[in-house]
Amino acid sequence: MIVQWRKSSYTGGVNDNQCVELGRLSSGIGVRDSKNPDGGHLTLTSAQFTDVINQIKQHTER
Image (cartoon, rainbow, N blue to C red; front, side, top):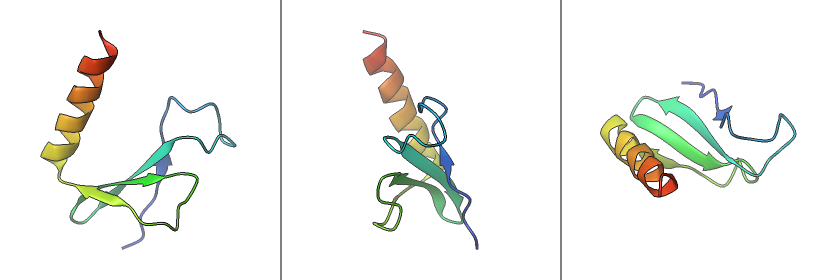
């Protein structure tokens, strides 16, 4: 399976590598550091990814 990684829409542009990238994996959602794409990734289930996003939203709303 070839993973197509996408940068966050909050990044400063195509050449901004100070963000995370997401990829759909057969086992869930992959999250990796855009500065080190060959350094591995974190794999989250869809439910775990949703929880992380909800926690981020709650933190930024304060």
